[in-house]
Image (tube, rainbow, N blue to C red; front, side):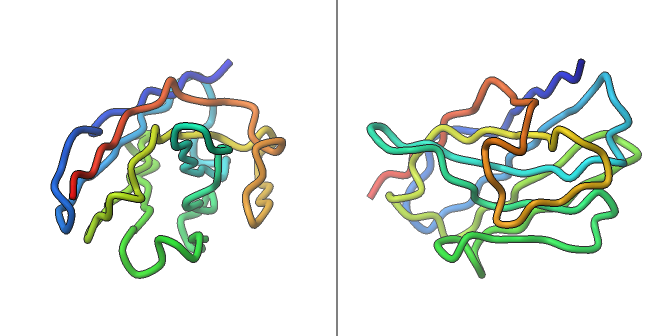
Amino acid sequence: QVQLVESGGGLVQAGGSLRLSCAASGRTFSTYTMAWFRQAPGKERDSVASIRWTGSSTYYADSVKGRFTISRDNAKNTVYLQMNSLKPEDTAVYYCAAESLPYRTTWPPRQSSYDYWGQGTQVTVSS
C-alpha cells in the first residue's frame, strides 16, 4: 500500500501563489509517475499536472500552463505543485495521486490509471 499526504493548501487572493506538497510512503516512489488532480464543487475531478518518475517530463492542463509547475524530489519521496498567478477558478480540492503501475505514464492523466490518492487539500482563491 502507498500513502499520500498533501499539505500546503489555503486561502489566497487572486494573483497570489501557493505551493502544495505531497509526501509519499509505502512504495518505491521513484519508479512511479505522479499527478495532481483537482475537483471544484459540482464538477468532475480533472487532471492538473503530472510528472514522470524520472522527473524528466511533465504534463500540464491547458488551464494551468505557464502558471503552475510540478516537480519532485525522489530523495524525499515528495512531489510539489507550485501555483502562481492564481485565479478564482483555481478554487478546488487538490489531490495528489500515484500511477497504479511503475514505469508507466498515461497522458493526459486519467483517474482510472491512478490507484493511490491523498485525502485532498483545499485551495481557495478570492477575487
